[in-house]
Amino acid sequence: MNTRKMIYMTMFVAIAVAGSAFVSFPAGIAKAYPIQHAVNVIVAIVMGPVPAVIVAFMTGLVRVLTGTGSLLAFPGGMIGALLAGVFYKAFKKNWSAGLGEIIGTGLIAPLFAVPYAKILMGTTVTAFFFFPPFLVSTISGTIIGLLLAPRLLKLKMFQNLR
Image (cartoon, rainbow, N blue to C red; front, side, top):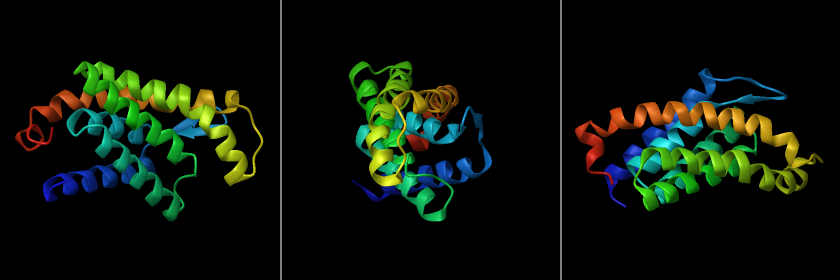
């Protein structure tokens, strides 16, 4: 991994952390933070699955350490980022990264969140508790990411990162 790629990854972490502090809305019993999911889609398209997972992990870590996020940022962000990158790599279409993000964060992450929340957070809820806020957050963020990605790919600085 070269220095330029790491700088861009750091920039995307900063955008996701700052964006989550300013852009959120109520999603049932939780809050939706769509910027994380938009960044997941963009990084998956521009850089690939491994950088997308690293960016999602670092974003979750910074948000938890600064008190602006919960431990659920890890399974929600990382699974969606991984599937977004894998789907994009397989199909080479922007919509496939969005589909991967929605499946990963909206459908698979809530299943991981149940035992994760029980062990680490001491809560006993079912996956149905996590589905609505995870889906609302990821769908709104995916739309933002899919709108921004084509515009970013036109910039010379992002064309050499793939």
